[in-house]
Image (cartoon, rainbow, N blue to C red; front, side):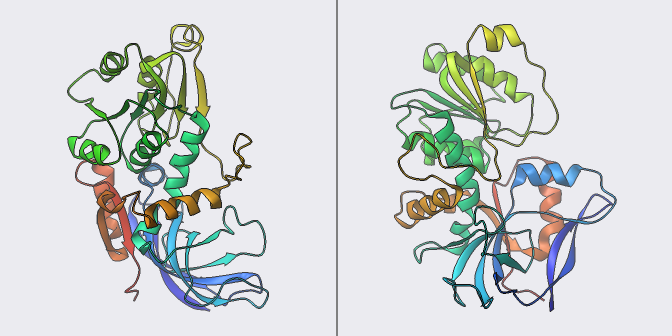
Length: 334
């Protein structure tokens, strides 16, 4: 048993450092010493702003090395680098003896992928699954509303799928600059122009596939209006709350298909010969990074010690200016 640091959201509405006890691994478990964790800004800001009566751990993406393996574990050895589902904390136990698609997942990281790059395996899977579900065809127009990390990765996968034009929409020029590097053929700053009208002008009547990756639920109404007749609108973000939409003019008469992209564990996609499970998607993201085809380094704006968590979450809560991808480093735990 040992004590490791962790980041918590307190009942006072702030981020703080706490600790957690980690035992030796059980027979089916591996003990992972965590090196990097990635902030999922949308869901974590939602959690940050929620009221609570007790401290709560947060986060779900971590990269580390296997420190020890239980007596029944095969296929993992000390010093193996793995991507795991874990909160922001210094170490964690992963049961690899059962279903490896969610909390039992421990994906091996190729040598050509850095720890920081490997943290993109989880959000890369989210974006990739959304593009798979929406199925943009070669030459079909795509609009991606909001360019946080999931939006950037959605833009990349839509472009890789052969969509054209691929239109990135955001309120910040700094994020749209990254979008162009991710494959956006056109960008729209919605703080300066009517995004819906701009999408219609660029596509000649609306995008065939529209992705809603914004935290603000009100953006969903604009996504419906930006869609062409018979288009697909895919909700890939994590917006809290509700939104009011006009059912007849925006959905029924436009014959829109509306998809949700959220699942803790989804079955293999039936329209693919390969079994595109979460672990397979993450392995594909690693492969793209290792081959130099997916550049995620420029998406990391902050890679800081975990001890700076309080200031980082205050920055995120103020709004999206000045940051994009945020990592916590755990290599100097005290």
